[in-house]
Length: 405
Ligand code: ATP
Image (cartoon, rainbow, N blue to C red; front, top):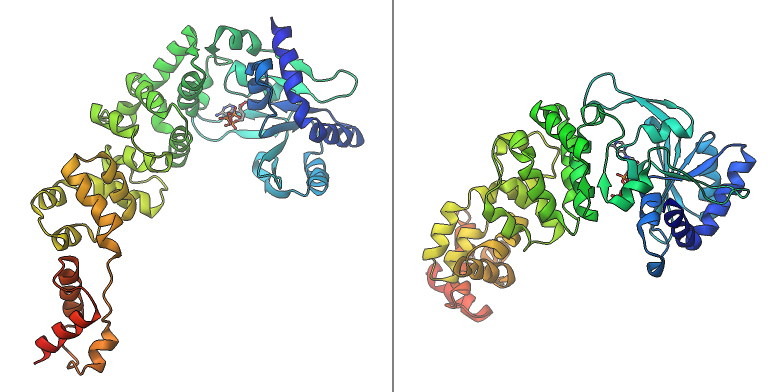
């Protein structure tokens, strides 16, 4: 059965063959072994022969000279290079928007649970051993003599067939608790089960609070990886069911959260997620200001909601919403009950775009005494225009004439 998978992987690899041939030539030149590793090998093995397609992003590991090979390959492919020295990795951004990682094979040692490991060069077998799950710990050697020889020391192909997510050793979730998120993400994405012993290790790691040892950056990164997944809602439900949300945030997400989540585009899902969790628990996350402010604005929407329910003029809606961050309003316009949602949509699509002709300069030129509250006048003009009392430039002039005399 493993042979079938390797065969279909080999067929699928055709489209990326040119790049792989270049890597082969360079590895030969530098007298080292090169491998396709991790996600692409897993995905190649999973994809059905009838569904042949090239793999999007290549993950390459070489036993030596990764920097030279990366540099020479980048020149050949006209790629832009980004170097991650501490991870002994180069990322090549190709002109067709795909990317390719070239890494030194390495082993990792964890001084303490949940911190980033110490990394040092090592052979491919050790590199595979440092990985998260059996299905992600396979490699295909890029050689001419033995085309795409499969290295599968932990029986990843068997687990792919049996649809199982399995860690490589008992300390896996303790060494790196981000794997807790990753296990749920992959299991849900592929419709796999988390293997029995792995499930029990996961439960123990959560119960013993290993997740809480992770830095804010690393938890945030995992959440960011979940939100664009097509099955993000199911992933979050499983995280909740496994006690992971409660463990990290001291509370569960309400049922309402899940029905709303499905209504939102991927880029809004993280903001919406934080809106349902206590600010103090995600305060230290290195979030974009816009996301943090929007999540807070959604949390504090009770008062504006009450005002909106009563608002019976466009200017009232405008006044209530004008200080709220745009992304918060976009989210609320999808998830609020109809009467409120409609008013937010009117604000976003219409009221927020209404402009008046009069400016501070106009007021000066009309001889308004300095010291007069210009912004008050401009605001009154705008509100009058929103409510239809003023329609055009002439109306504005008339209004100004009236208040000056
Ligand atoms: P995706 O399809 O989501 O890109 P991927 O398997 O390529 O999946 P990456 O996060 O890009 O995922 O990681 C690449 C590879 O690096 C994985 O396949 C796995 O072998 C290894 N890896 C990534 N994160 C970890 C981790 N936390 N612990 C161990 N190995 C990891």
